[in-house]
Image (tube, rainbow, N blue to C red; front, side, top):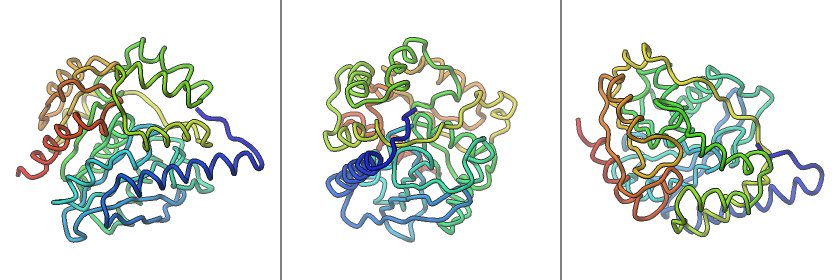
Length: 294
């Protein structure tokens, strides 16, 4: 977790990060993207949206530290048939601003996402999350299944299997003392040197110094709760994920979720999703097919 700088250094860090954030939006997101800051009981939430305003809504939740901008390939593709809303998590790097009431528990997270849906004036939406965002998406669906038309979990962590010890060991230096160098080293290891988008990678570097809050974590959802979830769910795993055992994730999800579909993105790793070009095309195709099938 990043420490919070003080004084002018904090302003410089924030300004540098926000400039990199805006650069990704300008360079990678499609023309016509809109940016909205909506109030919630936990602070102001930034939503980057693209697609026909009267199309079915699709909410995207990124993994920790990735920001909503990481979904640019999905916005451009899925925004042809859906109104895509990519959300910055409160307390994580991004343009969301925490309020006086902190997000400290899973019920806080689900109440925050309820408030986001309310602000979008939607009673029900498709919900897609990657990594930690998938963990949030699954908990919210268990909390309010009537508000989730379809659920997509992209290489979900702590949902159906635990982290590999080696993954946590490699991530530890980056988590304890974040820096651009440590982030680069970790991503290069996990993705086996995949060429990540330079503009987004620069933003990820800047995120290392961004003041953040401790993320809400917890146990995996109880098997009994998962077995009663009647929402159509797609689980997409990364073939070469180093975060967890992808085969175990698929097997457990298939066993516990009554309406689960699963697929594996060939050659992908946990952190090459969702933006690495060769993986993004297959990811987009799988999500689109799932969303358009009744």
